[in-house]
Length: 219
Image (cartoon, rainbow, N blue to C red; front, side, top):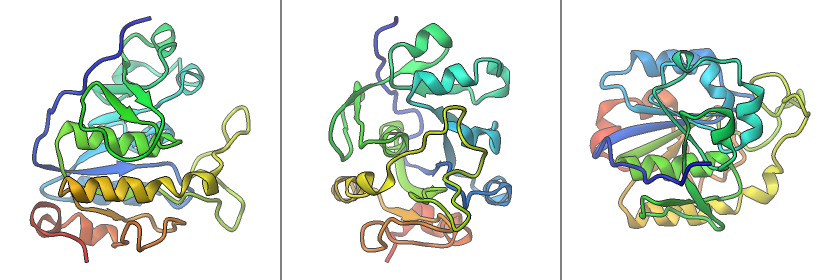
């Protein structure tokens, strides 16, 4: 197994869109991202890569996910791949392993990130380390839809899904840390359980406008 890496500040001052796998996520959302100009850097989490293999970054924390997707060639994935579990390197050698620590917030040390209890939280920390000036969230439903679906895609092979309620409180610490770093964040998910007083909501079309991403802070 390879040693953990440091996250290079590749895109300082650029806007980022971090895309989770909630049931409200759709191909139309990613079409809006592709049409936006300037286009923010995109980090996709887990199966969100199915809708955006042209993303800048894929973050999938668990070796199990990489095992399920072992047949997917690197050429069908974003150029930059990150994960958290060291055993991932046995499955896909091109994944850069990031060390994690328990807790919530934003680590400014490029050698590790906060776990926050789920990959979406970790991907937001990665965005900050890569240089994000602002962050918009998409597909962060953090709960099932009315049809009982936990993701936009079919259930995982083992049928598991996150314990969302236990993971919601971590977003307060994350927001406070981003505020301290002067990195505004909005939640553009079409449905979400994250309270608006924790991460304010904004339509994706508005967040993708250059005026907000580059110069403004959300209300």
